[in-house]
Amino acid sequence: MKKPIPRFKNEDAEREFWARHDSTDFIDWRRAKRASLPNLKPSSQTISLRLPKPMLARLKQLANKRDVPYQSLLKMFVADRLRAELEKLETNYSR
Image (cartoon, rainbow, N blue to C red):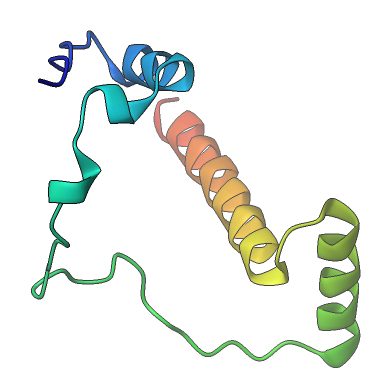
């Protein structure tokens, strides 16, 4: 008989619990079945973006220094700029 999995207050509590406990004490992995999610839609969309070669080279160089894929770094840059621009708009609009 496996131990019951406790209820957690939040994801942080659950993350902390599983970091300190072995899941085999709670789950019989031999009886696990592979999940199939055929209707799952991707949460991102592929786009085509043309960048000057020197700009792409600098982006890849910076990404390499940060040890992240260049596409991920570009997404972080775009997200940061979007956030800043939206905050600026909200500040100007509330005046």
